[in-house]
Image (spheres, rainbow, N blue to C red):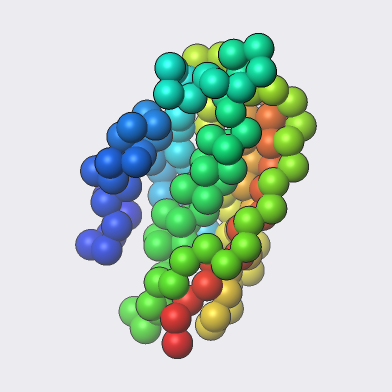
Length: 133
């Protein structure tokens, strides 16, 4: 899914390597999905590695921000990312839903939840996304 002319999520080589796809992006919201496979199930008890969950939080926040940008916004990048791991992530896939809580001129605050294929909440996160002046 293409969010805008600046960002084509599904063509990114890193996203392709992980099996991460953009399912939906609209104003203040985005949802990404990760197919669990050999590149991701490298944690304890064949769970998804915690670094992959952190990556999902970051990668869900970005299209939510891009779908909500004004003409004069210049993308900067992630300024801060916090994650709380709630349970090991297993199953066939994971979904991360990102919601913009607040967007100002310099920063956007995005909350992200990651659920497994059974609907269990595995991790929550908060991203601060910075815009260039």
